[in-house]
Amino acid sequence: MNTLELILDKKKVFFHELGGVYLDELQILIVSDLHFGKGISMAKDGFNIPPFDIDDTLSKLENIIKFFSPKKVITLGDNFHEKDSLKKINKDSLFKINLLTEKHNFLWIAGNHDNCLKGKNLLSAKSHAFYKIDRYEFTHIKTTQEKDYIFEFSGHYHPKCLLKYNGSSYNYKCFILGKNFCILPSFGTYTGGLDVESEALKGVLKNKKIDLIVIGKRNILKKKLKNDST
Image 1 (tube, helix red, strand yellow):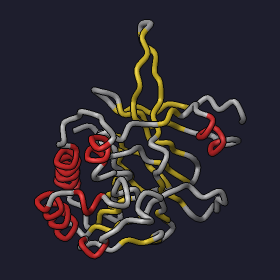
Image 2: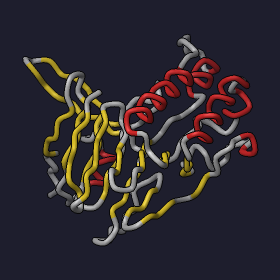
Image 3: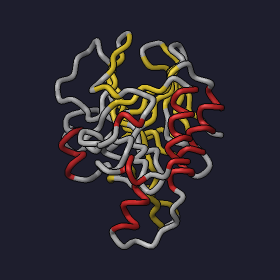
C-alpha cells in the first residue's frame, strides 16, 4: 500500500492511499465520511447498484488498521448516511461494525448526517461533537476561525481534484492541506467527491496557501492548488 510521509509541526504524518491519515507520535488513525448505509439509501431511490458498500468500506478499514496498528481510530463524521441507516442495516453488518469499533478503540465524531441518527444505542462506540488532544482538534466541518496553535482535521467536503495527462482528464480523491488544517477525502464506498475548484470549496479555501495530497492509481503526490483568491 502506498503512503506519503510528511513532517507537520516536527511530527511524522502519513497519508494513505485508502484515504486515511496516521499521526505517528500519537498512534492515531483518522478517516472521514464512511457513510455506512448509502447503498441501501440509493437502492431505495431507484439506483440499481450492488449492495456491498458496507462490507467494502469495512474491508478497507480493516486493511488500513492492519497497516498502521493504531492505538485509536478517529472518524470525522457522517459515519452513517441517513437518520434511519441503523434500522436498515442488517444485523450481520451492524455486528461487524461494532466488533471493529470495539477492537480498535474507535471514537466517532458526529457529522451533519449523524445528528438525527436513530438507534444510537445499537452502537458500541460513543459519538462526540469534536475531540482534542495535544494541539490537534478533530471535527466534521472545518471551522472558520483558525488558531496558530491548533492543527485541525476535518472532513465533510469529500475533496477531489482534476488532473490532465496526454489530453485526457482524470478525477482523483485528495487531501486538502493548509498551514494549520487538513480536510480529508471521503473514505466510504459510493461517497464520490466535490472538486477543489468548486465554488463551495473556493469559499472555504480563499486567501490560503494550499497543498493537495492527491491519491493516484499508482502513487500519492503533493501539488500546489492554484488559488485565484490568494
